[in-house]
Image (tube, rainbow, N blue to C red; front, top):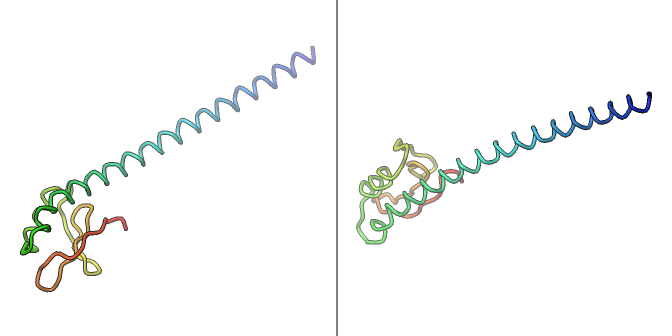
Length: 110
């Protein structure tokens, strides 16, 4: 009789432990996939913005207003701000000379 009680107790503890591990694994997978999706959306927006400004910055004489307009139109959140010499629009940071010529683009999460 004592042996069956010990066996049942061991099996019950094993079942609870395995269910706890599966719960942890399921939550961890969900969180990981959520972070992966957000990262994918950020990269997708940055790529769309880069492709939108590419035709403008490839030709000489594109103005700051034109480049910012193209980047803003491709951004999900078109609010912009300036920091450390870059104008951040959506997921891109754009750098311009004093004369308004495009110099460089960097990802906003850098």
